[in-house]
Image (cartoon, rainbow, N blue to C red; front, side, top):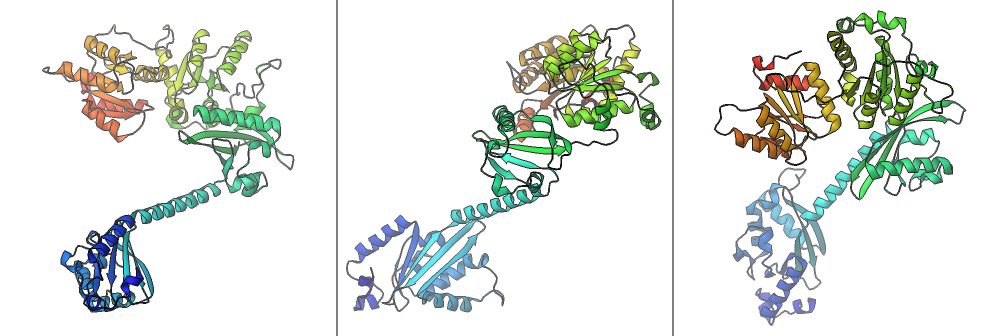
Length: 573
């Protein structure tokens, strides 16, 4: 190409292409297309001898400015007048350059042997200009769009900053944390982990448990890790560890699965359990149910602490009667933190309480208690434990309350006190808190609940019974429509993911039946996730409002007060 530019006949001086101009123009256009870039060629007199049509994609100038013979100064002046390059240009120390200063600066850059610059031409538009001045005096300029490349660079930089921020957060956590990939290799550890095991990240990252622990311990770790990765179920376990100085510590380990299918990771945290005062030491001193049992129950009934009643807040005196002292309660939960808090709270108000962590422990405990003549007054079951725990309570004739994590943490005393207070009012009626009531023997059905999950049905049942509402449970969308047609409830709580007709379809069918009538039943969508599309779909299906799981008495009372008339809300206790 340089050989062609060395021609010095009149045609080249006048700004025209050398011999065969059409062929060379076609060649340059083809090169521009192949490079996805614009090409401009000037001669040594700064006159344009070629400009590809792609230049107009970068600068909104008149096509006449691309004709051979156009002076470089005229071309740059037209570009300056568009304002494209100045709007997003970096500010100069002396302020914004005027037209003549800007033109002088740009013409000078064209006479450098090599010059390259990246300019911003819009909020998300970046271009690269590369210029080469050949020995013959000809200048070749190439302009290309690098917006996607810059976006990737900015994304990479943002990702790097997020990674650094995440590492800073993890390193400042006071408890050990590690992350494993789907092959169970360590891919991240924090400073607390390294300090606990007196190691460094380089000694851990990329290795497996078998490289760091004994074969037996590594096998147990990896079995638990694999289960969490495959099922997505959170694992909570308690371990007793012996440190290098010989001190024993109780450790609670939590494992979670994060990520997307094909890119799952395991995140595990370890925290020392408190061993002071009213926490675990008090539970550890409690006697076991039986010494001959093949199961070890570290937490048996906690004797009433005399100070507990003296420290009882005034607000609780109104709802916790004196005869609650000595009532026996069993807590069934796999969450060690929830277990510790629940036992402490129950002991504080005079209940004798203990805990088990699964259906097998519960079954064995109830057998031992029965053979020892110990009568339990109530079983509190974490709603993550499954139906088997509830069935065991029924088999032994013991009332049960099913609670979610929020209720265990915030409403435990209220729920338990309400349970016993209600029993005091209905002296001879059998306790049936754990059963799903579908009775419709009263005049008007107040609440229809459409929910297919067994545990959630129990939660709704307990809350509605406690609040004094007459209700029915439908386990499918089809059944919800049928019960609504037969009983005309005052309000419907509609889970959106139902078998048969889903919640959206059931709501549309109810609205279709109501057309032309004077009564419109409030339908409340019950959502598990706060996705905007679910909110929009609920409104589109004719629902009046939405609530989120897990539900609580306060949430339901608020929604009833909002959508029901005062006279409709009168509860029959």
